[in-house]
Length: 187
Image (tube, rainbow, N blue to C red):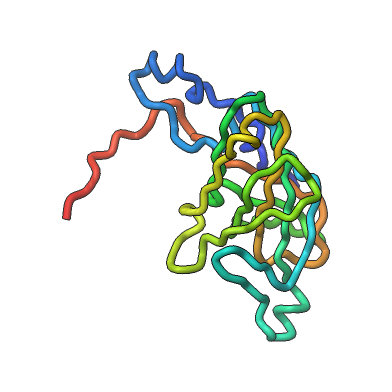
């Protein structure tokens, strides 16, 4: 089977200011992975519960659920130019993987803060509590993380099977250089 994880490797010309000026269109906002940034998984831990600064989630006490699914806490290393500030939105991240002979994808439900140390606990924020959607969880590098060339964050994915193998982090990218021109809506 072929996993279509080319999203991570897509080089999008519209991210550059030059293309945006040529087409008279703005660059796509909140692009998590510009072309001079790499993201790689450095570790995965599995748990039946996750604590965050805005609550906690636990797999239900139904034996079938607890025995078949876990949360995956994925540590991601980001290599980038020094001085570059990055923002990652949870809705831009999916975990693509195989379990047994099946291919799967799971959306990101929580993000941590950024730091320069791989094996350090980072506070998480869920996007599914208090009525928020994962798209409202965005994390931006602070001053120290922006200055660094390598930083780490954690992302949480739900309903991961026990026999997970071959895992890819996929990062959403714009599908075209120019935006679709919407007329908006009115009440």
